[in-house]
Image (tube, rainbow, N blue to C red):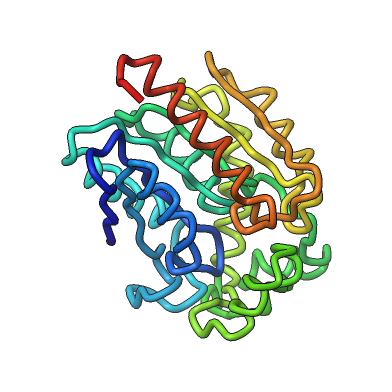
Length: 267
């Protein structure tokens, strides 16, 4: 777990959760934007990804491993005795949703960035059927994810960095896929159990990875007292890496600042 502290007096803590196949180092720009805007940031690599060696790369035994890990990050944020916000991108957004459905967190708000609630590219019907059997007899079998750098962002600098990134995962296990699919299903089936917290959902309008209609469906049915949806028309999946990322960040920061004002913090 890593912590980046704000310049000067901090307003709040942002706990960030990265997406599938990636790692915390890809968030250097966003971390710095939060930090220089007066926020502490806490982040780490999820099990089986990035620099972690607790399980095989691209593999987990249970989606709960992610929930346990991120809960630890949130608890670490409590130590600052400041308002805490949870920001999850893609699978990190799905993790945030599932965590809010099984736990009651003491946080001030949630930001979901292109949350993984439905995939555009899915395995063939045959492979999907076979995956159930393989999950029982050979769960650690890894296969190509089918995702490419060009599908994630239009930003040429990020694309170039990702091509040469040795920590970027290209293969995932059968168990990992089945756990992801199960978590997406649970996110919809357990909608009524989601903790009622202020939530901002931002979605890339030209997402090549996540089904934006699935994200909108989940958002529209989420029983939240305060929720905001923002679609960024030209953006691919990684809205915080897109050419419009400064505008995306300012929108997210405005949401955080508005929540801080609503609970009596001076911004």
